[in-house]
Image 1 (cartoon, rainbow over the protein chains, first blue to last red):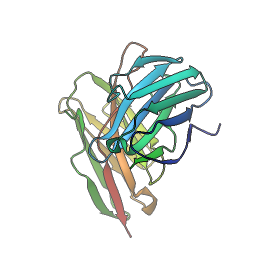
Image 2: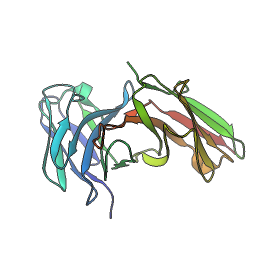
Image 3: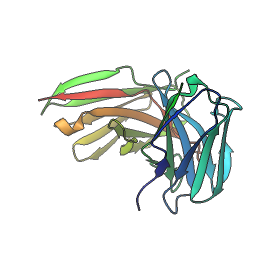
Length: 114
Length: 115
């Protein structure tokens, strides 16, 4: 397996624009997580899915953020409208069980909002 | 409020010596702990984990120690090698009866191995 695949690797967009980040989890993994890494807050969990169903989105910072998982092999994280403070590295991770086992991370999407 | 704390943003160690990275947590519901290693421009990769029913877990050069009463864990790397230079994240999770709630991460410690 190629691991967790995220696209794009880098995204630069203007404030106010819509941004969509994509993730393909490892085949057979039931859990998918979206994390955000910033200098100030480190790595923080935004939302996670179990069998394509959102379980906990309490980490999503604002209504401008939304995430979907239409099938077991694809998830999106959308920000609309984007703001400069959304600039961060966004990681997708998947695991075969849940929080009590290791999660496998993608390489991340570095988002810059200017 | 940070539930997982890594108070040393960076640590410099000579090659061949022992590296000790520390982590403290505040949530007594955490019962599974992991260490991740991260190189620049890559995602974190799993290194080693420990369940709260244990106080030590060893994997090659890496050993994790857990002191539940102190809510403290540490990662020992011995001997340290140049390839160990990376950012190390401590992470914790709760057991939720077969469910999951993701991982709570510390802010990381940048380990630098000096030749």
